[in-house]
Length: 291
Image (cartoon, rainbow, N blue to C red; front, top):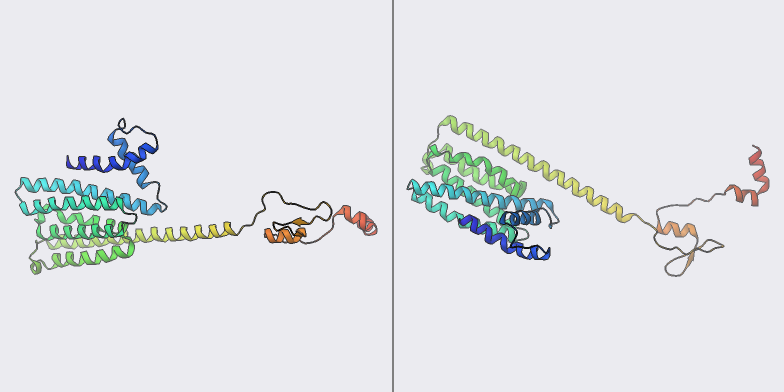
């Protein structure tokens, strides 16, 4: 009920202005249609950088999924009378709601992304080290590299991975140092190798995507520069009926070859057509025809 009330309050206010502009009846539209319309309007149009809009959509979806998961675990902790974990999960839910609001209100929510990744890493470390190993909380770490690289990029994602994995591997390899839970050696070895493999391919994927986007922007920039350098003639061009000189915008008459050279990238070379050759040089015309 809390999540449904939040979604209704969050999307209703934002849609009201948009729906009025499009002359749509807000009362007749269902909540599902309002949410779908908002997602299309917010994340898949209206922003110049499509990659930023996708990051915003992904961050919002990650916050919503995290809220649902925490509500589920908070309910289990309450039923099993695990009050410390119940309080932690319950306190983390409004924090994620605040991050969700900031993600959609700020134009460039890079700080929000980093706060979300840091909080997610801290929460995973806590549950992985001080929760019952039989609960399998450690397996949630496989989503961490995917989310961190996609939201924070290649460089910041690596920084968050090094910081988080440092604490995680210390807890796994030296459980007595921080008084954390004990995992079997075979499980720890398999988990560390699997996590590093997933992290490597996540890094490789974001590297290829960023490299492709950079090349695409360079080609787009070169294309825009090429289009800007193209010279074209438009409108009426005044030309003399006798000498064929052309009048420019300042009122000066110029030879046609000079005018075309200034307004286009063409260079003219002089020659003579057959009619003019016959009229002005009849002897030369006769000799050429006889050959």
